[in-house]
Length: 620
Ligand SMILES: [Zn+2]
Image (tube, rainbow, N blue to C red; front, side, top):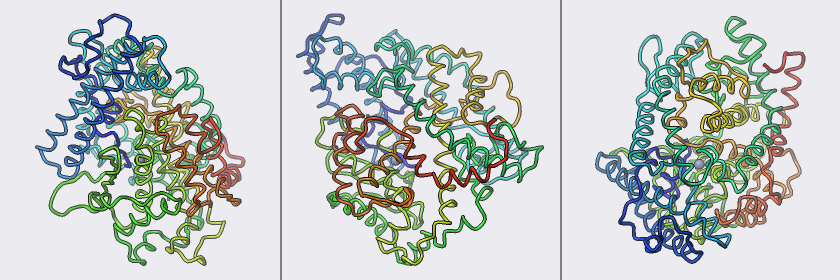
């Protein structure tokens, strides 16, 4: 629900647009050096540097126009602004494809300096779905990707035999507690949405891999994995290391949740052993379980004794005052106040007279100071958290604004989301006291912590194996290790292996269940979400250590600590200019992503879960 739009349509197209595959290079780009370059000659260092400079100038200008169009489209949704946004997006697609191919060529120049080489790599690896130059291939790839996306968007399942569309079925999976109806929704959604995509998906894989080879990669998955400043295999090993660190926590949560589901539904629906039925976890993909918190909440411990929504209302907060409070957090760390334009140009409340995209997002219109959020704020605790999260994006964007265009980004694609979430983790009862929302006497005692942590874990810990396995599946598909005939069995096997879940009934031979998850037909790499979950706790712990916090990690707030702010800024201002371990080191002192901070945060819960799970069958 919290997305970020920073490098505007370009970033959007580099990162997520299915229109990506479009087109071979157009002849009228205003890049002088490439004209002087023979198609297969070896470029010189000077030519490569001139190319990068020209590209950065062109994309900087383009990104501002694209951001402006995107902003207007999101704030005034009409057929016309949709058309304008599609038009500018297509231009961005053409540019990114053309520049990637050229960057692959310039990367062969001998003796390139590290900065130029890094920028060429960013251009070369920035495309999600690369089209080969074979005549007709780009068009075909684009058509397939668009078709898959719109199939997903139009997808429907059924509930009691009646058709039910995507967002409604998602919501119903969170609130419905009837196992037969849950199974019907799960099965119909996966079958109706996924199955028709399978052949096209296989075709798309073949074409994109041709494109990846032209850019110098073994396959498209290897290309995705090469975005992390280390060899592709080493990156895969890094994610495995992180998973093994947090897996014991997931295993205990799994056992505990399975026991509770067994108590609720009985053996015939959920057995005491083995995998959990995927449709019982409150989410279509069983990726976050917070919706069934009521089924697992410890009696009494779930009641914190206060409610942030009520505190906000009692103190007369409105949307503006909530945003000011978020700004206050960053100011307390020593960051400059937000510019006046932030307040005059942002969207804080849902307008009565027009359609807007209410999905919360953070924007950087001019790559300098024109930062904004777009949000339909309601006075409640969730939106208070989301504001802190979105502002995390804005402060990151502003911190790296002096970097050159291709470095205006997070250190890797997990960083941007993790910053906002690390800030949001700081919204502890202690913080609410410090900003005058909560009386100190109301701070909940430690015996309430388990409920608080369990609620967090049902979303943040439950997500981890899913965050990992989506690309595990895709990497094997893209490398050819998993053949089309095995697409679904491989998916179901990974879901069982990592998440410990299984479909509510046997899946037919022609099923394509991965297609029923948006990011598969939408071609959005997924490992970033896994990384962001891990990194947010690592950032949070680094800040708490810097602040000299001595208590249990989950109770820490680093509000008001200027030393934390200074160190945080040291990392943020690097943007993507250095390999991510350099950025990580600037803030945390370590060069490795590390899951132990997350383990420490949830330690009181882990102790409690182990006690609850005593004598219960473990694993699946
Ligand atoms: Zn975000």
